[in-house]
Amino acid sequence: MKRVFDIFCSLIISFIALPIIFLLIIISKITIGSPIFFKQERAGLNGKIFYIIKFRTMKSLKDENGKLLPDNERITDFGRFLRSTSLDEIPELINVIKGDMSLVGPRPLLKEYLDLYSPVQARRHDVRPGLTGWAQINGRNNLTWNEKFEKDIWYVDNQSMLMDIKILILTIKKIITKEGISAKNNEFMPPFTGNNDEAK
Image (cartoon, rainbow, N blue to C red; front, side):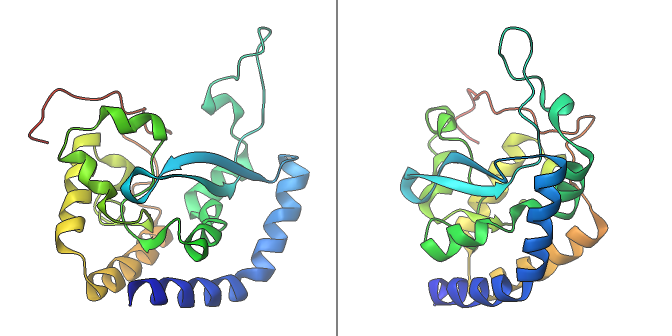
């Protein structure tokens, strides 16, 4: 039932959002350049690796040694707008339709994090990752990594269709209010570096 719901809603949303998608592609091409889309390997259901698809929000600016500049020096004003409105996530509907993701679930994280999770934290991969999730409506980037993982596991243990619908409705509210977009004291969430607390 959840998979049918994901496909049906994703197709409807994609159709309705087509004019917006075309407009975003044009503006992205002008302000950020090619490629329009950002692809990155992420860990999904059972740790299976897939390529997430998003609108690119940063330019590929490098220093004299050919190393990418810090994120806060590469992100554009339009990129900040995309992030603050979560419009950069729209292409992930393709991932949902393909079956890589669900509309609701723990957010898909870098594949490099797989070896850093505690056994409990790794349970976030017992379900498909989502466009939004329990952590996103309860703090989002204002949460610490451990707090995020605790909420992810809570969702894994308590998921239901009614819960998913509730999360989707509250997500729309969060997007409108732009609550929790940036991490505390930082525009970008710091990378997860692991922990030694097996209880979390």
